[in-house]
Length: 165
Image (cartoon, rainbow, N blue to C red):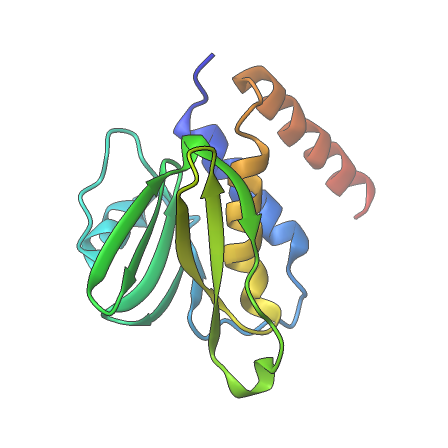
């Protein structure tokens, strides 16, 4: 059964929010939760939106160095070299090198595919790193699930969140 972009979006956003430290400061990372602003995200990055595609999160360093995770793709612009990967086929992720993070603004993560291809993406260093790390992680994690399984996961998280209030 095909997963809806809305369900993928909800799970990725909830996964990111559940992992964030309360005092995390986002310098270059963003999450996209407001439905009315989705089209402006694609315009900001100069990306053509696919049918039903929703933006999840991004790391925007400058106009020619950024990564955008959507419900369908992981898109990276590195020195004006634009690459994209279909997240339906992503298998494994490397979170990048966080050694010496005090001296750097970002690191590069990698998503691998069964065919041997790899796709790089930018990750902000520090507490805000969880935005891209968890966004990509949950996008890969839910891939084998059916729509029904993903909705069950959302319901379980809601119940758990209500109990912990």
